[in-house]
Image (tube, rainbow, N blue to C red):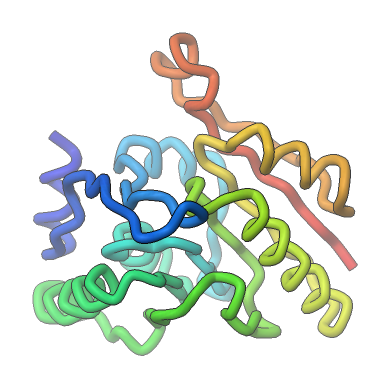
Length: 201
């Protein structure tokens, strides 16, 4: 099973689903399945020069996966202090097992809307971590950052809510550039896909 295979390879623990949340606006933690990450990165290119931000990173699965295979700088944003601490624990185990330098892995314990967008942040990942109201605030921060520091940025949505999609397509300059479906799953559940939105200034 890929969940256990990759966790063992990376020497981390990210399996399971935690169904409790302290907020109506922030949703329960659930990691992106590894098979979905494989499908995404078979098509979508991540470069070493990219700086990928995962909003609602939980225990850091996406961060370690990208760092291990693509060597990009990865940033995890997590409001839950327990999850944040477990992500830091995973970082220690990951570094010990893989002998990888972890200076390009960063975790922040804060609300998504309080994260200060770094001028080098250029890839933003969302797996429905919070309500559309918070999403709107975060996207506005991204847009202002691009206006201040011109660059190409992508928003990657997995299992995208209709509210997220509607906001991006109707209220922002982001444009849909790719749709990556999960074969064998999408046919039964149309939410099983990645949507890539791009903004170029």
